[in-house]
Every structure is written in C-alpha cells, then in structure tokens.
Image 1: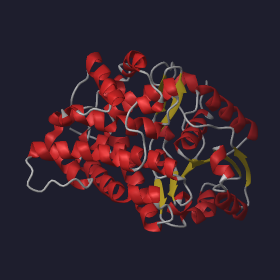
Image 2: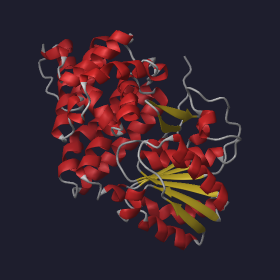
Image 3: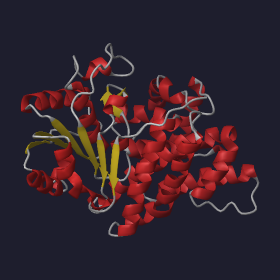
Length: 392
C-alpha cells in the first residue's frame, strides 16, 4: 500500500543552528517578522539569541508572548489578531510545543477565512485553502517534535482538539541543542518522556512503515540512553544534543505513522485537569503498553532492547513484558509521578476521563489493539492505582 512520507521543506540541526536565521529570512525576502514565544522562554533569555539574529538580518520584528501552555482557543484567536495587526510577512515560533503550535496555526489562518474554531478536527466547519505566511520553527525543549509536524493542539473544556493539515508544516525547522541547555529538570523530564512516547507509539502504530520504524528506533535509543542524564545533570552537553536529535527523529516518525492510545487518553488529562502534555503522556505510558503488548509482541521486544531492558535469554513474551516494565522505570527515574492519584485526580473522576477519552477516535484507530469504553476505563483505573497487569 502506498504511504507518503512528509516533512518540513528544510531542517537545519546542530549546535549554533540558530545563526542561520538571517540567511533563511533573506531567502524568504522577509521584511516584517512576528515572533511567537511563551513568557517562560522570554524570561529565561532564550529569545535573546534569536533577537540578535533578527537584528543582524535587518528586519522589523515584534515578539508576542501572551501565550500559555496547553493553549485554549481564545489564546490562538488573540494571537491571530495580533499577527494581522502587525502586518507580518513571516512568522517565527520559538519555545515549547504550545508556542510552536500557535505559530503554525496563525501563520496559516492568516491566509484563510474564519478563525481557530472553524478548523478544529472534531468540530470545525471549514477547510484550509491557503498556506498563509511562511514560518520558521525553533524548539527550546527536546520533546514535542512540534517543529516537524503539521499538528496544532488546543485545549477545550474537558479535552483537547487539533488543527492538522500539511499547510501547518514549517518552511524551515531549526533544531539547536544549545537552546535546551538551561531547561529545568521537571520540563526536561516531561518533554523527554513525551518524545519517547512519540517514538514508541509511532513504532507500534498500524500506520508505521520501514522508514518511520527506523526513525522511531533511533529516537527511542537516543532518548532512553540520555534522558536520565539530561534531567539530573542538565549541563551535560552530549546528553542534551542526543535528546534534541531524538526528539526531532521521533517527531518525524510520529507525524507520519501517528500516535495512539497514550495520546488519546492523555488529552482528557490536559483538558480536564490541566496536567501538562508531557506529564499526561508519561503517567499513562506504561499502563497503555501493559494493555497492548500482546498485540505487538515482536515489536515490544525490540522496544525493550532499544530502551535498555535486559532481554538476554528471555522469550519473546518475557522480552515484551520487560519493555513495559522499563517504560515505567524511565518515568519514575526522571521524577514524574507514576499514578493519577499523585496528580490530585480522584477515583470518582475516572468515568468522565473515560467518556472523554473514548471520543479520541482519530488516535485510538492507530492502536494495534482496539479499545472499548470499558478498556479505556480500566486503563485509567490502572494508572490511578499504579498497578501493571504483568505484575499481578
């Protein structure tokens, strides 16, 4: 079956890659540049290297930072209005996934009728007709892979929804590991496990291909070998470099193969309880794979090997189970709570989580093992109690 592989037109990666910005702007004949950066990025001084490059380029620019993590639709609408008011001809997004998602969405909607809500996957009533403004995306975390995907995520009441279209792909993605060096441990952990989730979910996706598999395997090995060091010894340059590479290759893999049950059930955690996307994925990761491993046993054994589980002398079944356990070890080792109860969720909340999770059919359809409502509820119950079936 024919399956396309899609990526940004150009990816520039490596230490100091941000210094290519003036040449990139010149190539697009940019004159007025709107930069979308979340407040944390600005306050941490991470936008300063970009500003230096913008000044070298001689462009008029404005930094818009009225953003926040897990952005609601209203944040996107305000950002779109600011973009139009500034009369920009080029867009840059710098920061974590949320600021990159906003940059992607508003750069495209600048050239289309309507606003954010008109193009949401679950409830939108319009189809994108124009690519809008050109855009450059610069991640400052090693995790979301947003710089190489066409997905823009928005929080709704009780869940999340997305705008997804090839028009949202970056014209240029700039991945500079030096921008991740000062990211604090908690964010390094959450975004790092997010990237690992992208890799393992893409690998077991029903839409995977040999190309997406190769990227996913590369990503999960780089991330698993370096995430603990990156979290607890953030000054380790090599660990940061490897995490940036792993995040990007995981992004390319999951963009083409798709993610599945972990992300589907994580969306309600963000929508209902405002748990960050990375932590939402992390707390569910082992409990979802505890459910699906029999449907992808061969691949689970390979995952186990790549993420560092000891599989020597084990049967295929035993290796797959070792992989599930190692996923839980990674989450716990980087300091992320491994139960829903630790995030303040009560047992009485699980039904509404399951009702919301069941609606994420776009994501659930990619799982090698199907989910009923009862299956979904049981996954939340397992994550609440912190129990793996394989340990019973």
